[in-house]
Length: 110
Image (cartoon, rainbow, N blue to C red; front, side, top):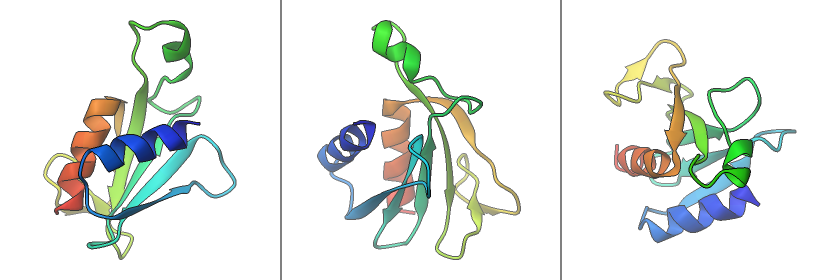
């Protein structure tokens, strides 16, 4: 269900063409890969990640939060602050849906 929501929100955000896939053998995250530059944005929402989706279903004042990370076509990590390549994975936790869409826009045109 949440994959459908992400696809709808991303499509409404006028982002370039992208593909959405689930994490292999998992249902608690997805990868958004932009076809033009092959940058992938990972969005996670599992117990142990810096995320909270479950409480947003029962408390409308508690918006869903996600953990995000990104890498380029060669699998090199992208620093989500500077959008430069970096040597190690650098994720950002507790990102609202608006933050995720804003980061997707930045990455899509990187």
